[in-house]
Image (tube, rainbow, N blue to C red):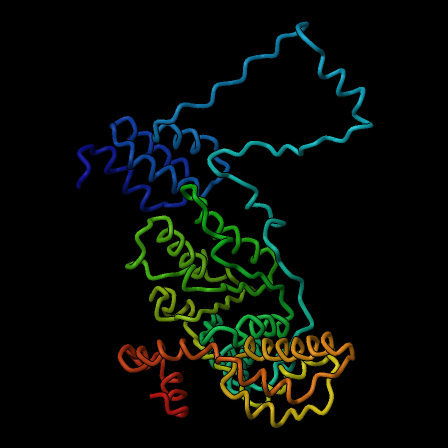
Length: 411
Protein backbone atom coordinates (compact mmCIF):
# COMPACT_ATOMS: atom_id res chain seq x y z
CA UNK A 1 0.00 0.00 0.00
CA UNK A 2 1.51 3.40 -0.93
CA UNK A 3 2.39 5.84 1.87
CA UNK A 4 -0.18 8.59 2.39
CA UNK A 5 2.39 10.96 3.94
CA UNK A 6 4.85 12.64 1.55
CA UNK A 7 7.33 12.97 4.43
CA UNK A 8 7.25 9.21 5.11
CA UNK A 9 7.66 8.56 1.38
CA UNK A 10 10.74 10.79 1.30
CA UNK A 11 12.19 9.16 4.41
CA UNK A 12 11.68 5.68 2.93
CA UNK A 13 13.57 6.75 -0.20
CA UNK A 14 16.40 8.13 1.95
CA UNK A 15 16.61 4.91 4.00
CA UNK A 16 16.65 2.81 0.82
CA UNK A 17 19.61 4.89 -0.42
CA UNK A 18 21.48 4.49 2.93
CA UNK A 19 20.22 1.27 4.57
CA UNK A 20 23.03 1.22 7.18
CA UNK A 21 22.24 4.76 8.46
CA UNK A 22 20.75 3.87 11.87
CA UNK A 23 19.68 7.43 12.96
CA UNK A 24 17.92 7.94 9.64
CA UNK A 25 16.07 4.63 9.97
CA UNK A 26 15.07 5.43 13.57
CA UNK A 27 13.70 8.79 12.43
CA UNK A 28 11.53 6.95 9.90
CA UNK A 29 10.39 4.56 12.66
CA UNK A 30 9.41 7.52 14.87
CA UNK A 31 7.33 8.99 12.02
CA UNK A 32 5.61 5.64 11.46
CA UNK A 33 4.88 5.27 15.16
CA UNK A 34 3.45 8.81 15.37
CA UNK A 35 1.27 7.97 12.35
CA UNK A 36 -0.19 4.97 14.20
CA UNK A 37 1.66 2.39 12.08
CA UNK A 38 3.25 0.46 14.96
CA UNK A 39 3.91 -2.77 13.00
CA UNK A 40 5.97 -0.92 10.40
CA UNK A 41 7.83 0.93 13.16
CA UNK A 42 8.70 -2.41 14.80
CA UNK A 43 10.11 -3.68 11.51
CA UNK A 44 12.30 -0.60 11.04
CA UNK A 45 13.52 -0.75 14.66
CA UNK A 46 14.41 -4.45 14.22
CA UNK A 47 16.56 -3.64 11.16
CA UNK A 48 18.24 -0.82 13.10
CA UNK A 49 19.07 -3.27 15.90
CA UNK A 50 20.70 -5.60 13.35
CA UNK A 51 23.12 -2.81 12.45
CA UNK A 52 23.54 -1.47 16.00
CA UNK A 53 22.54 -4.13 18.59
CA UNK A 54 23.58 -1.93 21.55
CA UNK A 55 21.70 1.21 20.43
CA UNK A 56 19.60 2.28 23.44
CA UNK A 57 17.34 4.53 21.32
CA UNK A 58 16.52 1.65 18.98
CA UNK A 59 15.67 -0.64 21.90
CA UNK A 60 13.50 2.04 23.51
CA UNK A 61 11.68 2.61 20.24
CA UNK A 62 11.13 -1.15 19.82
CA UNK A 63 9.56 -1.33 23.32
CA UNK A 64 7.29 1.66 22.55
CA UNK A 65 6.22 0.33 19.17
CA UNK A 66 5.36 -3.08 20.64
CA UNK A 67 3.25 -1.41 23.31
CA UNK A 68 5.33 -2.67 26.21
CA UNK A 69 5.69 -0.62 29.37
CA UNK A 70 9.21 -0.11 30.71
CA UNK A 71 10.05 -2.12 33.81
CA UNK A 72 9.35 -0.05 36.94
CA UNK A 73 12.35 0.77 39.08
CA UNK A 74 12.64 -1.14 42.32
CA UNK A 75 11.68 0.96 45.38
CA UNK A 76 14.62 2.03 47.55
CA UNK A 77 15.35 -0.17 50.53
CA UNK A 78 14.09 1.12 53.84
CA UNK A 79 16.91 1.77 56.20
CA UNK A 80 16.90 1.09 59.90
CA UNK A 81 14.13 -1.53 59.83
CA UNK A 82 14.34 -5.23 60.45
CA UNK A 83 17.41 -7.44 60.51
CA UNK A 84 20.67 -6.07 59.03
CA UNK A 85 21.27 -8.77 56.41
CA UNK A 86 24.21 -6.96 54.82
CA UNK A 87 26.17 -6.85 58.08
CA UNK A 88 25.44 -10.50 58.72
CA UNK A 89 26.59 -11.43 55.21
CA UNK A 90 29.89 -9.62 55.73
CA UNK A 91 30.46 -11.52 58.98
CA UNK A 92 30.03 -15.00 57.48
CA UNK A 93 31.23 -14.24 53.95
CA UNK A 94 34.64 -15.85 54.48
CA UNK A 95 33.15 -19.03 55.92
CA UNK A 96 30.11 -19.57 53.69
CA UNK A 97 30.55 -19.22 49.92
CA UNK A 98 27.67 -17.77 47.88
CA UNK A 99 25.11 -20.43 46.95
CA UNK A 100 24.24 -18.88 43.58
CA UNK A 101 26.17 -16.85 41.03
CA UNK A 102 24.01 -14.03 39.73
CA UNK A 103 24.20 -12.99 36.08
CA UNK A 104 23.23 -9.51 34.95
CA UNK A 105 19.72 -9.16 33.58
CA UNK A 106 19.39 -9.20 29.79
CA UNK A 107 17.11 -7.01 27.73
CA UNK A 108 14.92 -8.60 25.04
CA UNK A 109 17.07 -11.70 24.76
CA UNK A 110 20.29 -9.73 24.29
CA UNK A 111 23.23 -11.85 25.39
CA UNK A 112 26.99 -11.86 25.01
CA UNK A 113 27.00 -13.18 21.43
CA UNK A 114 28.97 -10.14 20.36
CA UNK A 115 31.94 -11.28 22.42
CA UNK A 116 34.54 -13.16 20.36
CA UNK A 117 34.94 -15.66 23.21
CA UNK A 118 31.29 -16.69 22.72
CA UNK A 119 32.27 -18.46 19.50
CA UNK A 120 34.57 -21.47 19.70
CA UNK A 121 37.32 -20.66 17.20
CA UNK A 122 39.84 -23.50 17.01
CA UNK A 123 43.49 -22.73 16.43
CA UNK A 124 45.13 -24.05 13.21
CA UNK A 125 45.46 -27.82 13.60
CA UNK A 126 47.94 -30.41 12.37
CA UNK A 127 45.34 -32.33 10.34
CA UNK A 128 46.06 -32.36 6.59
CA UNK A 129 44.43 -33.92 3.52
CA UNK A 130 47.23 -36.49 3.54
CA UNK A 131 45.71 -37.76 6.80
CA UNK A 132 42.44 -38.51 4.99
CA UNK A 133 42.73 -42.07 3.70
CA UNK A 134 41.80 -42.69 0.07
CA UNK A 135 39.15 -40.40 -1.46
CA UNK A 136 41.59 -39.35 -4.19
CA UNK A 137 38.83 -37.95 -6.42
CA UNK A 138 37.56 -35.70 -3.61
CA UNK A 139 41.11 -34.52 -2.89
CA UNK A 140 41.75 -33.79 -6.57
CA UNK A 141 38.60 -31.69 -6.81
CA UNK A 142 39.47 -29.83 -3.62
CA UNK A 143 42.92 -29.13 -5.01
CA UNK A 144 41.59 -27.84 -8.34
CA UNK A 145 38.67 -25.81 -7.01
CA UNK A 146 40.09 -24.43 -3.79
CA UNK A 147 43.65 -25.18 -2.77
CA UNK A 148 45.75 -24.80 -5.94
CA UNK A 149 44.59 -21.19 -6.60
CA UNK A 150 45.39 -20.31 -3.00
CA UNK A 151 48.88 -21.80 -3.13
CA UNK A 152 49.75 -20.13 -6.44
CA UNK A 153 48.77 -16.44 -6.29
CA UNK A 154 50.83 -15.56 -9.41
CA UNK A 155 49.11 -18.22 -11.52
CA UNK A 156 45.78 -17.16 -10.05
CA UNK A 157 46.44 -13.60 -11.18
CA UNK A 158 47.61 -14.76 -14.61
CA UNK A 159 44.46 -16.79 -15.28
CA UNK A 160 42.10 -14.37 -13.54
CA UNK A 161 40.97 -17.05 -11.08
CA UNK A 162 38.68 -15.60 -8.43
CA UNK A 163 38.69 -16.77 -4.81
CA UNK A 164 35.18 -15.52 -4.20
CA UNK A 165 32.63 -18.10 -3.24
CA UNK A 166 32.67 -21.14 -1.01
CA UNK A 167 32.57 -24.90 -1.21
CA UNK A 168 29.59 -27.16 -0.53
CA UNK A 169 30.25 -30.77 0.52
CA UNK A 170 27.26 -33.08 0.16
CA UNK A 171 26.59 -36.77 0.42
CA UNK A 172 25.24 -39.46 2.76
CA UNK A 173 25.69 -39.03 6.52
CA UNK A 174 28.75 -40.37 8.31
CA UNK A 175 31.13 -40.15 5.35
CA UNK A 176 33.60 -37.60 6.73
CA UNK A 177 32.46 -34.20 5.45
CA UNK A 178 33.39 -32.48 8.72
CA UNK A 179 36.73 -34.33 8.84
CA UNK A 180 37.54 -33.14 5.31
CA UNK A 181 36.61 -29.55 6.22
CA UNK A 182 39.04 -29.67 9.17
CA UNK A 183 41.72 -31.08 6.88
CA UNK A 184 41.21 -28.19 4.44
CA UNK A 185 41.62 -25.74 7.33
CA UNK A 186 44.86 -27.50 8.22
CA UNK A 187 46.09 -27.24 4.63
CA UNK A 188 45.42 -23.49 4.71
CA UNK A 189 46.96 -23.03 8.16
CA UNK A 190 43.67 -21.36 9.12
CA UNK A 191 41.57 -21.24 12.27
CA UNK A 192 38.38 -23.31 12.23
CA UNK A 193 34.94 -22.05 13.25
CA UNK A 194 32.15 -24.62 13.12
CA UNK A 195 28.59 -23.22 12.98
CA UNK A 196 25.35 -25.13 13.50
CA UNK A 197 21.73 -24.03 13.57
CA UNK A 198 21.81 -23.90 17.39
CA UNK A 199 24.51 -21.23 17.23
CA UNK A 200 22.36 -18.95 15.09
CA UNK A 201 18.65 -19.29 15.84
CA UNK A 202 17.22 -17.19 18.67
CA UNK A 203 13.67 -16.57 19.86
CA UNK A 204 14.07 -12.78 19.94
CA UNK A 205 13.44 -10.59 16.91
CA UNK A 206 16.66 -9.68 15.13
CA UNK A 207 18.95 -11.85 17.28
CA UNK A 208 19.34 -14.66 14.73
CA UNK A 209 20.55 -12.16 12.13
CA UNK A 210 22.82 -10.54 14.71
CA UNK A 211 24.31 -13.93 15.64
CA UNK A 212 25.01 -14.70 11.98
CA UNK A 213 26.70 -11.33 11.52
CA UNK A 214 28.81 -11.75 14.67
CA UNK A 215 29.97 -15.21 13.55
CA UNK A 216 31.34 -13.80 10.31
CA UNK A 217 32.78 -10.74 12.07
CA UNK A 218 34.62 -13.11 14.42
CA UNK A 219 35.98 -15.05 11.43
CA UNK A 220 37.13 -11.79 9.79
CA UNK A 221 38.97 -10.80 12.97
CA UNK A 222 40.56 -14.27 13.19
CA UNK A 223 41.50 -14.48 9.49
CA UNK A 224 42.73 -16.66 7.96
CA UNK A 225 39.74 -18.66 9.14
CA UNK A 226 37.56 -21.44 7.74
CA UNK A 227 33.86 -20.99 8.56
CA UNK A 228 32.23 -24.42 8.43
CA UNK A 229 28.43 -24.30 8.10
CA UNK A 230 27.29 -27.71 9.30
CA UNK A 231 23.87 -29.04 8.22
CA UNK A 232 23.40 -26.21 5.73
CA UNK A 233 19.89 -27.42 4.93
CA UNK A 234 18.88 -26.30 8.44
CA UNK A 235 20.79 -23.00 8.34
CA UNK A 236 19.89 -22.14 4.75
CA UNK A 237 16.64 -23.93 4.00
CA UNK A 238 14.62 -22.85 0.97
CA UNK A 239 12.79 -19.69 1.98
CA UNK A 240 9.79 -20.62 -0.18
CA UNK A 241 9.18 -23.59 2.14
CA UNK A 242 9.90 -21.75 5.39
CA UNK A 243 6.86 -20.44 7.23
CA UNK A 244 8.73 -18.66 10.03
CA UNK A 245 9.87 -15.15 9.10
CA UNK A 246 12.80 -15.33 11.54
CA UNK A 247 14.28 -18.27 9.64
CA UNK A 248 13.85 -16.46 6.32
CA UNK A 249 15.61 -13.41 7.75
CA UNK A 250 18.50 -15.59 8.96
CA UNK A 251 18.94 -17.01 5.45
CA UNK A 252 18.89 -13.47 4.01
CA UNK A 253 21.56 -12.43 6.52
CA UNK A 254 23.70 -15.43 5.54
CA UNK A 255 23.48 -14.35 1.90
CA UNK A 256 24.61 -10.85 2.89
CA UNK A 257 27.58 -12.20 4.86
CA UNK A 258 28.66 -14.47 2.00
CA UNK A 259 28.66 -11.51 -0.37
CA UNK A 260 30.65 -9.37 2.08
CA UNK A 261 30.25 -5.64 2.58
CA UNK A 262 32.71 -4.94 -0.22
CA UNK A 263 35.14 -6.85 -2.42
CA UNK A 264 37.72 -7.21 0.38
CA UNK A 265 35.47 -7.77 3.41
CA UNK A 266 35.84 -11.55 3.38
CA UNK A 267 39.56 -11.57 2.55
CA UNK A 268 41.06 -14.56 4.38
CA UNK A 269 37.64 -16.02 5.27
CA UNK A 270 37.01 -19.36 3.56
CA UNK A 271 33.47 -20.73 3.72
CA UNK A 272 32.82 -24.46 3.61
CA UNK A 273 29.42 -26.02 4.13
CA UNK A 274 28.08 -29.54 4.46
CA UNK A 275 24.66 -31.04 3.95
CA UNK A 276 23.04 -34.41 3.36
CA UNK A 277 20.23 -32.88 1.30
CA UNK A 278 21.55 -30.17 -1.03
CA UNK A 279 18.22 -30.13 -2.87
CA UNK A 280 16.67 -28.55 0.26
CA UNK A 281 19.18 -25.67 0.33
CA UNK A 282 17.99 -22.24 -0.82
CA UNK A 283 18.94 -21.74 -4.47
CA UNK A 284 20.32 -18.27 -3.79
CA UNK A 285 23.03 -19.79 -1.57
CA UNK A 286 24.38 -21.74 -4.55
CA UNK A 287 24.55 -18.75 -6.85
CA UNK A 288 28.01 -17.96 -8.36
CA UNK A 289 30.14 -16.10 -5.85
CA UNK A 290 28.54 -17.85 -2.87
CA UNK A 291 28.58 -21.64 -2.34
CA UNK A 292 29.09 -22.19 -6.05
CA UNK A 293 31.48 -25.16 -5.96
CA UNK A 294 30.02 -28.55 -5.03
CA UNK A 295 31.80 -31.79 -4.15
CA UNK A 296 30.09 -35.14 -3.60
CA UNK A 297 31.52 -37.02 -0.60
CA UNK A 298 30.63 -40.70 -0.96
CA UNK A 299 31.12 -43.73 1.31
CA UNK A 300 34.86 -44.40 1.68
CA UNK A 301 36.64 -46.31 -1.07
CA UNK A 302 38.97 -49.27 -0.42
CA UNK A 303 42.07 -47.33 0.72
CA UNK A 304 39.90 -45.06 2.87
CA UNK A 305 38.16 -48.03 4.52
CA UNK A 306 41.53 -49.60 5.30
CA UNK A 307 42.75 -46.36 6.90
CA UNK A 308 39.53 -46.02 8.95
CA UNK A 309 39.69 -49.63 10.15
CA UNK A 310 43.36 -49.25 11.11
CA UNK A 311 42.50 -46.10 13.06
CA UNK A 312 39.67 -47.68 15.06
CA UNK A 313 41.62 -50.90 15.78
CA UNK A 314 44.94 -49.24 16.60
CA UNK A 315 44.56 -49.30 20.40
CA UNK A 316 42.57 -52.54 20.68
CA UNK A 317 44.00 -56.03 21.29
CA UNK A 318 43.76 -57.79 17.90
CA UNK A 319 45.37 -60.81 16.26
CA UNK A 320 45.21 -62.46 12.85
CA UNK A 321 43.23 -59.64 11.24
CA UNK A 322 43.25 -59.71 7.42
CA UNK A 323 42.55 -56.09 6.55
CA UNK A 324 42.40 -56.83 2.81
CA UNK A 325 39.53 -59.28 3.29
CA UNK A 326 37.80 -56.96 5.75
CA UNK A 327 38.00 -54.08 3.28
CA UNK A 328 36.28 -56.19 0.60
CA UNK A 329 33.34 -57.24 2.80
CA UNK A 330 32.73 -53.69 4.04
CA UNK A 331 32.14 -52.12 0.62
CA UNK A 332 29.35 -49.54 0.88
CA UNK A 333 29.75 -48.88 4.59
CA UNK A 334 30.25 -45.30 5.76
CA UNK A 335 32.99 -44.16 8.12
CA UNK A 336 30.47 -44.16 10.98
CA UNK A 337 29.42 -47.72 10.06
CA UNK A 338 33.05 -48.86 10.17
CA UNK A 339 33.55 -47.31 13.60
CA UNK A 340 30.42 -49.14 14.81
CA UNK A 341 31.73 -52.39 13.31
CA UNK A 342 34.97 -52.16 15.32
CA UNK A 343 33.03 -51.29 18.46
CA UNK A 344 30.72 -54.29 18.01
CA UNK A 345 33.64 -56.67 17.42
CA UNK A 346 35.37 -55.39 20.57
CA UNK A 347 32.12 -55.86 22.50
CA UNK A 348 31.86 -59.51 21.37
CA UNK A 349 35.40 -60.26 22.53
CA UNK A 350 34.84 -58.44 25.83
CA UNK A 351 31.63 -60.35 26.64
CA UNK A 352 33.25 -63.65 25.70
CA UNK A 353 36.19 -62.87 27.99
CA UNK A 354 33.80 -61.97 30.83
CA UNK A 355 31.89 -65.25 30.45
CA UNK A 356 34.94 -67.52 30.29
CA UNK A 357 37.12 -65.61 32.72
CA UNK A 358 39.94 -65.71 30.20
CA UNK A 359 40.95 -62.61 28.23
CA UNK A 360 41.19 -63.15 24.49
CA UNK A 361 42.11 -61.02 21.49
CA UNK A 362 39.73 -59.55 18.91
CA UNK A 363 39.94 -61.86 15.91
CA UNK A 364 38.83 -61.94 12.32
CA UNK A 365 35.72 -63.94 13.26
CA UNK A 366 34.52 -61.13 15.54
CA UNK A 367 35.02 -58.52 12.83
CA UNK A 368 33.34 -60.56 10.07
CA UNK A 369 30.35 -61.35 12.30
CA UNK A 370 30.02 -57.68 13.18
CA UNK A 371 30.25 -56.74 9.49
CA UNK A 372 27.30 -59.02 8.70
CA UNK A 373 25.20 -57.34 11.38
CA UNK A 374 25.91 -53.77 10.29
CA UNK A 375 23.28 -52.36 7.93
CA UNK A 376 24.77 -49.68 5.61
CA UNK A 377 23.42 -46.39 6.93
CA UNK A 378 23.78 -44.72 3.52
CA UNK A 379 21.12 -46.89 1.82
CA UNK A 380 18.11 -44.70 2.75
CA UNK A 381 20.02 -41.65 1.53
CA UNK A 382 20.72 -43.22 -1.85
CA UNK A 383 17.04 -44.18 -2.15
CA UNK A 384 16.11 -40.49 -1.85
CA UNK A 385 19.02 -39.26 -3.95
CA UNK A 386 18.03 -41.62 -6.76
CA UNK A 387 14.75 -39.75 -7.24
CA UNK A 388 16.57 -36.42 -7.33
CA UNK A 389 19.11 -37.73 -9.84
CA UNK A 390 16.33 -39.03 -12.10
CA UNK A 391 13.83 -36.20 -11.96
CA UNK A 392 15.47 -33.04 -10.54
CA UNK A 393 18.93 -32.81 -12.11
CA UNK A 394 18.41 -29.39 -13.68
CA UNK A 395 21.50 -28.07 -15.42
CA UNK A 396 23.55 -31.14 -14.53
CA UNK A 397 23.86 -30.13 -10.86
CA UNK A 398 24.02 -33.74 -9.73
CA UNK A 399 25.87 -35.32 -12.65
CA UNK A 400 28.53 -36.74 -10.32
CA UNK A 401 25.77 -38.41 -8.27
CA UNK A 402 24.17 -39.81 -11.44
CA UNK A 403 27.54 -41.25 -12.55
CA UNK A 404 28.06 -42.94 -9.16
CA UNK A 405 24.54 -44.42 -9.11
CA UNK A 406 25.04 -45.82 -12.62
CA UNK A 407 28.43 -47.24 -11.66
CA UNK A 408 26.82 -48.98 -8.67
CA UNK A 409 23.86 -50.05 -10.82
CA UNK A 410 21.42 -48.17 -8.62
CA UNK A 411 20.01 -46.17 -11.52
